[in-house]
Length: 304
Image: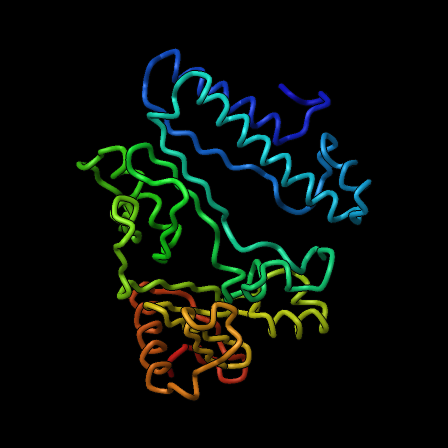
């Protein structure tokens, strides 16, 4: 439909989203719109509606492309909000906005010093550090959420499914697979609620980015910034990351050290061992794949 036209993908997706909203409005039925922009993502293609402005501001070509993609996505979201306002749909629409991973910082290269783009968080996309796994999220729910408020309860993407079902009032349903997530509706309704016993697990037992396989310099940098094979667990303010390459466990207290500068694994050996054991037990119970030591042929675990 748009092939051969002078239109950027972000704008085309926005037009298609409006068509979907038109259809729901015409039929007077509830709707669920999942709007996933291809921006911002490599390989960068300049959105010419905004690109030249950033070039004129002195940005490098790569950063100008990146900034133009961001502004194009921002305009898209604004256009969709304007649509909902125009047809008086904001009062009965829940809006949830989030990213899928931490911001890109290394490959392809960004402007400025590598691994500084997500400060104060450490590292970026592909890393086991907070710069790779912590994302922004905004929820607008008329009559429930309060503007200009925040909640620091930690969540994970698996929580979206049960949350949306609860928001929609759907109770009697069956799923083929187990539901790993938990609804975060209670935290939206009561901003004072916190659960410090919640356990979150990340498992990435393979290399990220083809550069890690071919460039020795990149591999050294990547391992330093937490981009090698890893598993991680968070419980309360404590987070343990196990890196399979160097066989190294790192323990951080995120409340006191959001930038993960101070590895407390030696200082709190019992805490580190307990989290490593819990992490290993959870992964084994899920029949997760583990890296294998090439010399011995044995599987590697966070807790040996």
